[in-house]
Length: 495
Image 1 (cartoon, rainbow, N blue to C red):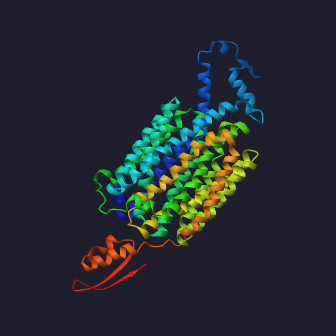
Image 2 (image 1 turned 60 degrees about the vertical axis):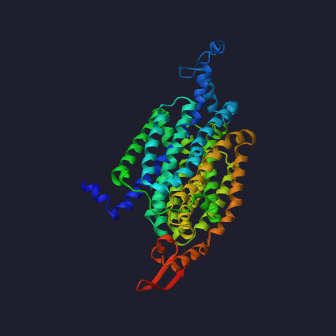
Image 3 (image 1 turned 90 degrees about the vertical axis):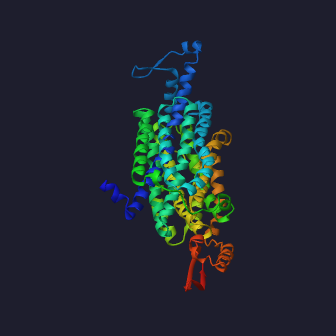
């Protein structure tokens, strides 16, 4: 009890908020990426097993096992795969891989699609009841999702598990970012806090794919998901012990409506800067493993390791730019340059010839996307402080919607588009979109304050002698009253 009381002290509470949000983002994004190297191989093998056991006894009887050089007998389809893996081009399995690619895209997109529809409800709900209950619910739902992943053996069950993850991910992301924005009011402090929390996000992305590929190959499909279920239970337990969600009261301050925020052009530009680089990551995660299997005959470990530079560079960039972009008011510049680098690097995928070229390109992708995300996420909270009421659930629901659009449209569209125009052409289109959008970030240099409506409201209330609660109602403006004998002597309003 002494330890819990100490952790609940005001000076320690900010640190515990960082720890809880760190775990939440780490868990959600590790589960997001751990399936990337598992699904293509697992679904392909499942289809092959289904074909062999489909009752076509005539075909199975005429394809006897083949003995390899060591004398070990293997099924015919396994021998074909092993022969293909020694060649430089695996085009013989192209049609089957295209079908698997579409299924993988649907699976990866399902999480973000569900999360996309959940965010407009979770954001206003967080504004109304606070962020602790949604955070606790998110940990519980993610635990259920990881358990479903571990024991799912069919495409439909995997799709259900991925959809459940979308519900939990919405709660964790929106509640987590709202927690940070509410606890860290200073712009520089907020940028530093979001940069640290994004370390959990990048570590999850970094560890997910390699961890999933290694555990899948040497331990089995269930093992990585059971480990994540344990982490979810620990994270939810820590949050419940320290913050006690059942004792937290609802928010007393009403935030700006979601539709009003959606009409704000600055928030829309910031959301676009989050969405389009995320679209690149989503297309790479869903289509790159299949393209590597077909054009480079990549092994299982390469399907996971190829994303490692992406995550490491994202980790470095998020810690650097989360603080620097806010300190020097350079969020717009970081976002603009980052999107241009994303676009050029994405177009360059068509020139990659081997596994090592992909490692270099993914390094640039991760660094530039990390610079954009860690710069724009704090800016979303700053825009609310500047132009609206300082309640952050809805604006971070919009930010998460932007992420979800990228992670849902990318995988869902990549399967059919890769089959029709090819992976390099698709990457060129996505890269061009980022380059075209990047100049719009210039408008984020000096966003204007929405003062006129609040000035009218302010002077009207002063005339009615309701000036006592104006600093609360107009919290994002600097208000100073000079009073004498309970009467307003003067009022100074500064931007």
